[in-house]
Length: 332
Image (cartoon, rainbow, N blue to C red; front, side, top):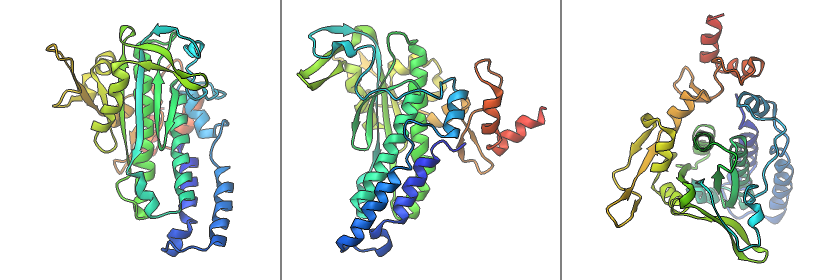
């Protein structure tokens, strides 16, 4: 299954037609740059918008998501938008997440800023797709990264934890598996994601409007919102670090490795711990990935019986994952 192929193909075309890459010089004349700007403007139209590709629709159906879902407005969690412009404060649990692409500034050493802009836009759009497919809310776009919330007033807390881990795992997969080799083939080394996630319980989170007039946003005040970006900074390359509240709510210790250094000291004898999260193992175990014959992770959906899934939606996915497909058909 190739749900990120449209994003990857736009990046590939932008890189292959980049005038700096083709000429290996930074002294480019304006006419050449103008032609490249026109090409990039046309190429941007190939990025998926609100309409999902067939592979995306198949994945959405298999995950139990309507293929007509709409993207949520930036920074507008529907359960708390009524706080905008008011002095009201509400307590409610939420999962805060931060993910971005590290060392992406190296792209400027190889390509024009127009190409870098389109690469960044492709990664951001793919990330927004993964967040929305998994029921999350993009709060803010920060360069080539996202601040995201998962959860809400009508959402089960454990399910929100599972959805947050699933979403960030898919984004990590995209950069590590779909983009890494292509970037390295074009002289860009060590581009990777880092992610951090933490859960603040209801008595640990204030929702409120921060700012003046239109210069503000509905946001959260919580230790755990503040800790999520710190965990991101502590993640390994292509890694994800989560807080103790996430680990205990998922209830599957095999995915978590406690880091030697705590993420927060309450200064009263209590310590708050952080954990490396094995997102690749998690994707396989929840049926969103398999290993191919070469041991490479492939995004897919398994076909184990599930009353919420329609086998007609799963067949086209399983058929594209040969090791898995052969295993499935042997039982028929």
